[in-house]
Image (cartoon, rainbow, N blue to C red; front, side):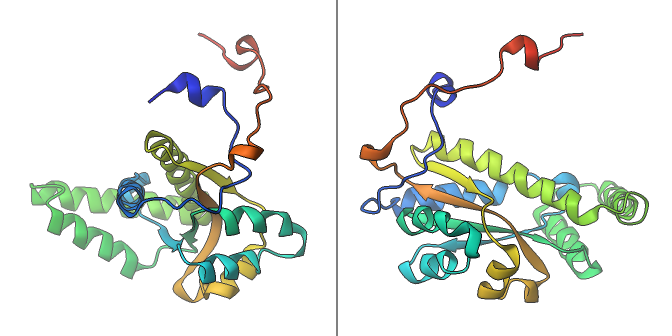
Length: 215
């Protein structure tokens, strides 16, 4: 990965509608997204991959009045992913996580799996009843997945732009997301830049002495 190149580029705002991510590259990126970590392996997400004109148009038409400027990005991107987050963690979801861990042999020693499950339940209870931030905490896991996937996309030569400019209620309704126990957290547009509309101005960030404290 060329970090110098990444540190000196802007996020893509204008995608080339004539270029599509090859299927093999897309599947590799989705495998990576599936593998991204989450705290206590809670896996609170479901991902809607919009690959067809109809899917992208449905999203573009339901961003909300004040966010219409993002419609062009979605329509011209090769693909857009709607990243959703669970509203809560019912026992059925937690049991499904544990069952998959057991099937995959995550902890070969059954006693360690049992201890892990007890610790996980305790931690989720802490978030739910003491900190009272369970959904917000799970959304942090979603943003971690977004950041890691953006880096993976760069490694594969794909541009990835996160979008927060949308009305989540409108998007949830258009794709019937809340019926699944999730809600929309963030969008990720994927594709290739329009070469005629690439930003070439310098990146502007605070100097290192304003950002780092060494102790």
